Length: 265
Image 1: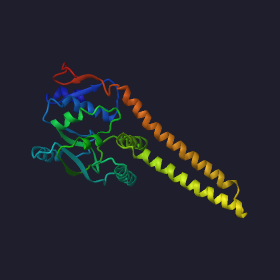
Image 2: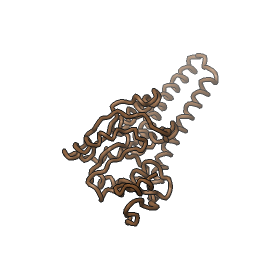
Image 3: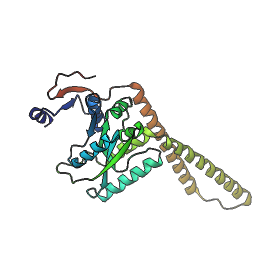
Image 4: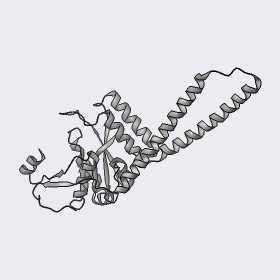
């Protein structure tokens, strides 16, 4: 489809990657490629749900001095109740964890040349562009629009993928989950001290000590907390492992369009 569009329109260009590297890396490949060829670039999903009419307003704000202009959904009526609830919960939770995101903003945005060049300096492998654009700085603003119904096909982000994406976003930008585990551990230690005092008092005063139910419940609870903590810390270690290997985030197989033979840096 992209090759056909490029063949019929001299203004159309396409980048074919050597393999599927995921939505975020594919988007980054496009932004990296155009950063030295344009004054500003606009990223938009191909499902035709985002309103292209606000591009005019984006450009106006860019001309007024905004280096980043976010496309923000004014409402989520096209989403199911579950999708709205989970999205709202995600934004609130990420803010609680210290990740500053634009509420109801996905990947529909305008970025000026300076912002694109700054983005290229972030050499992260665990990529979360919504968070990175907020870190860049520069003057920014938002334009609001009502998102349309999907015209064809279905979402490529099922629940499992959305959870993974949200988890990557949080763990890539915040160490608060590890801090939370630390305080949870301290809380359990304090509770254990009170429990020890109670058991000791029960022994000296001859009170009836409950059976094994409470003991087994405590063992299962503490075991679960330990496994959860180890898993969370392991996730951070895994991300460090991915980062230090410095593998390329994408490989371009070919450019499609008028300048197919152009060199790629």
